[in-house]
Amino acid sequence: MTTSDTRSIPVPPASHPDTTSISLAGTAGTTPTPTRGSWLGVASLGLGVFALVMGEFLPASLLSRIAGDLGVSEGLAGQSVTVTAIVAAIAGIGLPVLLPRLDRRIVMLGLTALAIASDLLVALAPNYPVLLAARILLGIAIGGFWALSLAMTAQLVPSHHLGRAMTVVNTGVSLATVAAIPLGTFLGEIWGWRWVFVLAAGIGAVALLVQIVVLPSVAPSGAPGFRALGSTLQSRLVLLGLVAVALIAGGHFTGFTYIRPAAESIGGLDATGLAMLLLVYGVAAFAGNLISGPLADRWLRGAVLVFPVAMGAGMAVFALGGGSAGSTIASVALWGLAFGGIPTLLQTWMARAEPERLESVGGLVVATFQVAIAVGAVVGGVLVDAVGVHTALVVGGIAGIAGGVLLSSLRRRA
Image (cartoon, rainbow, N blue to C red; front, side, top):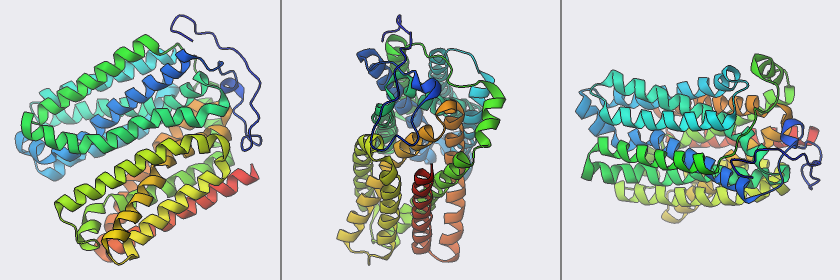
């Protein structure tokens, strides 16, 4: 499929070991045959995700310099991340509803351009209010892009390759997670924080150019507007699936938000040791993302249980393993490997649970994930202050395991 050949070729639903109970049907069932053009389109979405998530994470590594330059406290500067997450949650649900019939290629190009504008505006921001306004633009871009990427990907590849395709898209998240914070810290010392955001805008421009060349036109998926969203929310399967998403994502961030004090108090690590531990986590998460796609296509029912259980086990061993170097590294590697594959598994499960309304499902998953990040951080903070970081890790791990058990049981009933 090329940008000039955008017709969709109907194919019968594929029969695979773990997709017969809920197949990707409806509008997503009219997926094109696997072509070089369609997979290049998926890759262009992954590049766009990399650019957006990099922009989202950069303030964490540049917070002190941003605060000092703009004359605000670090705590206030950190709220630029919070604003982005809140707006992304709203945009994830609202954008597909507000643009029910517009060619999704045009929407994705516009959202990538919006992210570029956000990064440039941050780089030029003369004061804190302008910085916040720029981050609001990024939140709109992230929420909308994530919400629509699932439905677009489902129309670009055959249904039995959806897991692999989402792995390609989520590779952008893995690379941004591993690269953004250390790269931002390093280049911020050399160039200054504003030029780092100019670099992020440049990466976004590359992503936009690639999307213009290879991303085909894609019609909106499913019924448009508020009616589709309301119908999706009436599905008990979807609602319980979102509860599972909230438990897994919230459990992860209950612990991960406080991984620095955990590493210091449990593992006795200094700044250098923490950097190495985060590198181990990042590499493991990247590997987890790579293996999750084939598993999502062939063994989704088991994978949505095994990965959250492994995540919870890694968090618990980290908290209770005695603080030895070996147990700390092994537990964090297991944690990262498991959580790295979870986004692909969750998106694939939700797509197969509600194949007729992929855009609504994608928006709800984005919103739930963003809210879970905030709630997990709050709950973890309360536990850290009241009981200790060990408890935050264990509680987060238990929540993640509970989410996996719930999701797996729903899959069987479906």
